[in-house]
Image (cartoon, rainbow, N blue to C red):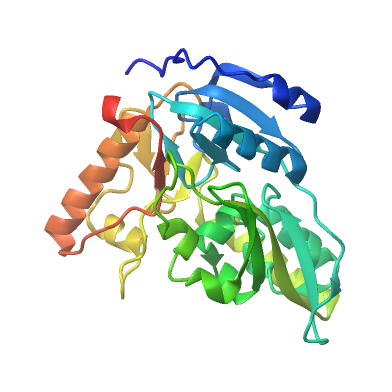
Amino acid sequence: MTDSVESVDRRIDFAPLEAYGIRVERQVSLAPHTTIKIGGPAEYFATVATAEQMSALIRWAQSVRLPYFVLGGGSNILISDAGIRGLVIYNRCRAVAPAVPAADGASVSVSAESGAALAGLARRTAREGLSGLEWAVSVPGTVGGAVVGNAGAHGSEIKDNLIAAQTIDAGGALRTWAAADLSYGYRSSALKRLRPLQAGFKPVVISAAFRLQPGDGDAIRARADGNLAHRRRTQPVEPSLGSTFINPPGYHAGRLIEQAGLKGAHVGGVQVSRLHANFLINPGGAGSATAADFMALVHHIQDVVQRVCGVTLEPEIQLAGEWQSA
């Protein structure tokens, strides 16, 4: 285990945040806020529950030159054992607006804040007889993360229904991105590919609007229920980050890992799931595994799959934190 990040004497004035009801804590463990229950502490940690708080906190952090990282559902993100230096903004902005007629006159638009759970939004719209997000009823993570990563399942992706996303950029300005502006690819987008600007600041998704189709409520709910049942049959329930590797063209990563004989393989407290080999699980829960264990198993899988199958696996997960000291 490596030492956690230590607070630097930054002489930061937190008083301006009081007007927005924002409280900043120090040395907060991030493991409970991730789906795999792994990760060191945040140097500074603050929770936001409204878009106003999010915008105010980001602008304040930029004004004092404090690097920040926005943490949503904690899936697909591996936080280092050393933790994250700077400010971690825990995104609990979850408001979902009622559906309104879309510009095309034949569909509706549903807007959600970036901290809303994608699966929750999918279940809600299915209950309301709106089609388009049934595929997402079992997808972990938040709307913001899904927009950035072009989340997908069952042959559908975020790009198929996204109308636009609103971000706050590195200068504190709001910007609306049409779906076409995001240059979507497989688990990728222009936002994901952007290099950090101005002391490590990147645009942060504030909200997103989706185009959905009113339809037969019973049929829509049946499709959603079928997708959820499929997830429960085929994916592990133990803590994980979701899919670990991107599917190479023409292959399924999980099948390659299974073909390489790695189901059940483990390093420390992290194990390849026996149910779905593209999931690395932490069966012991919080405190039983480390980010170093996870990455050592990732590298082992890559080496063996390359040797046995002749295919290079690329991680789908994102790394966050102080990896240089890990």
